[in-house]
Length: 418
Image (cartoon, rainbow, N blue to C red; front, side, top):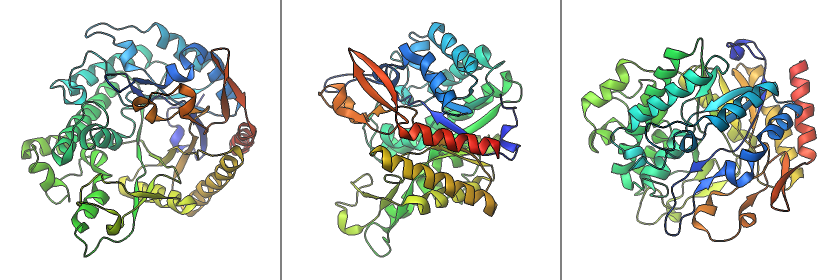
């Protein structure tokens, strides 16, 4: 098992992830998302952990299903999570535990806009730490906080369906405060914890200078860092988004709260998907100048990966980890990206960028988030991303190793040996 200072041992640690998106609230025209349920992980967790370890992974990014362990306010049910954590450790994996990978418990009205949300997520974090902190040392308080902010506060796509700049500002404040309080709570309980902050490696290319959308483009560039900037105390009066927050429900006291006692990452995680993480800003493709209008993604490949890891490393001054990457494609293309991306990380390390981890996400295939708003069978939404194919087998989802599993194992073992 890794030491609590694993990120300073000079090794590139290879990890895998199990997709753990939870949006348990349903409604007319909206199906709940629980990727553990949809992929069969609740029933097959033991074999999933063994498969991850046999693939050569040292670490596993894996999330606690808050809506399951806290089904009613004040009631906690750890039965499944206890068994899962023990099985993960027995398999020889080092967990990096996602506390929040979207989604709040069903009883929490208004979700992230609940007036007590920051205190409620703090309580949840403390309870997780009290239960597992003697064995689990690495934590991600919230995965991709800016995706939370955009989907739940700007686009009206997920609960609580906030919209526009005001919704974005409100949701950013709630997510960021909950993030800070969660890290405080874990640090109070766990001896020598490791905090792996994780956000989406969003990139923008193109030139909006001189167009009606120039200001919006500048906001996009700054906004991708907003939550991490808040929690690390970087949003002062000179920050490009301070005025926007103050014009949308914030006051100076709230800004000062984040600056007075900031938290920092031990490792800054960046999620990067070569075909989706980079968007082209072209004024000719926009309508009405509205933020959130469709923008075209472009495949930025290795250049984009090197850019985001270097940028986040320099901005936050912490070792960086590629915490998610893959391509949704035939297995040959997955293998090509795996080899190219690992080689790029190796080059960055040689150049002086302190990259401490690489994560293929996910171990096995997952189901597209559009399942939530669709009405077709689960199989219509399968995303071929994993080292294992999900194959329907008399109502059970079998995991079948594909050639990417073999290549990942070769890379993992060679880096561990090196």
